[in-house]
Image 1: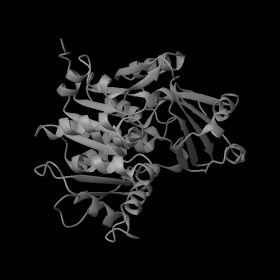
Image 2: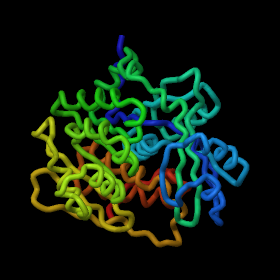
Image 3: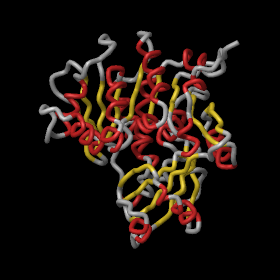
Image 4: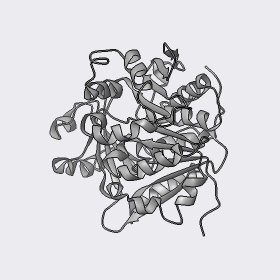
Length: 360
């Protein structure tokens, strides 16, 4: 018999242990003030890539330095952020891990955050890792997906999981999962399209997604009720799209073009949300002539501790607003508020005891 539990928000992507420069559970992150690590592994100072064979020694290299482990993976960060705001037992996260201590650390960190996880466990691969090299204000992310790359549609469609999918109202998918299991993404997109009440949200995640996984991303675009990205990601999307309408254009023009793309369910207008760091967030709504701009929550430079995962935190706050039925303006503001909290912590994490959302 299927589960009767209901989680308002369901998130799907790639759970990772992140190694970082200050303590926490499952990203691997370390400081590299002189750039030696970047040079050694041919990495750019502010980038996100999938690891190749030449990058494998990086993870042990990071662990030999001052580091911290954090429960990561972009959509898992977003899920934790949304649950930070929403009532208890509102958010479910799905992905694939190995049968190892890293997976146990992930579960423990998510349990502490009140986030329900339903991982597929792969018996052959270890839990995925993301190495984060900190160089000044820059963050270079190098991801070895490992078990995260083994997610399968049959897990999503299983008698234990699919009823949870059907009971959810909002689906959030990180673009990184396009490298793993597009059929699972499409199953969520089609489930959302079959109901007037359900919402499908996609995050572009990184420039390499539209650059190298354009076909998979394009298959999802007719289902986007909301699509989230930063200025670099949407510019990469526009370049990959190749249309003269967006060639060489700015963020506002690209946002407007994306909003007007073909959509499966026309009664719900698509919303495109583009963050720009400390610059105003740009929002385009299908059918509207212009774009909207929203200021971010101001913060002094002296209070900023770690900007890694700020975009994931923004998405968490924004999606929480969508789940709660808030206005577009307030949902964007909730995203900005949560990102502001996150960058004052070893990111992406959130302060405890919990703080209550307040407008800018």
